Length: 377
Image (cartoon, rainbow, N blue to C red; front, side, top):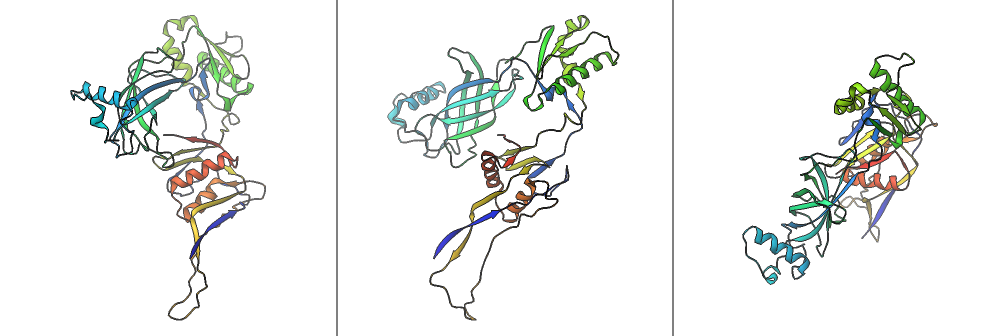
């Protein structure tokens, strides 16, 4: 008896879906288009970048998959941590049989908006030594610093490690596992500051719209001749000049700027997005995500062939089992097929959501998924 992989090759016919349509797929949320955006969603402060934090720590509680503790790189920090808690361990041979601990790298990215003391962020945990797997581990409270040599401690990290991909068990995440103990300010606002329109909205139309929205909102008028609060410098930068009366109240003025809303059908034709979370098995997508013709293969879809062939009798009839799903077009031949068509077919075949996410990631890599693909921890 041998098993052969059943390959489902789907030449997806061109299809269309109504904007904002609820396709009824468990685990898949379809987002409608929005009528307006706050300026804070369109821009960042210019000359800011995300802050990278780095640390080294110990993951404990592993079931024999940690580092061999005859390795001093792991044994020494483990003994130091135990001594700090009043456990006098001085000989690494006392721990050699354990393999319940792993030395790990801790990394985190603070977005360009910065963070304040007490804010929490996700962290990535990566085995630094000989650990085979971090499944079931707990990160011991560990200091985290800036990524440059000599940077001070900025945060502490701890929590349960979640390994999202069993193929890479030496890497995991801790959701909101990092707590800042110092503010991280990525920008300084003076009496004149620049806003940078995000890449997906870049263009003179966008910067002009942001500038005109701020000027009209500040004066509550579109009367010509008033000194501008904001002006577009190019296709990415809007320069904001704080009026003299508002300069003592910069915080309030910046909040006023960022909270303004823009309304423009062309600008708000947002890019299609697919957002996935492997930990929760969630897929969130705009309703109009196009996909190119693509062949889909899944290892769970298989059939069995028996050699030599059986002879059918009333007592031993020959039965055939098939697993397949049609991916059909839903509208005109002038439009591409939709992601919802494919997800519906995968659901019919009982393909787990996390494996659907793997397929979407591969489609994104090959350019068949016409949308921003975003994975969140």
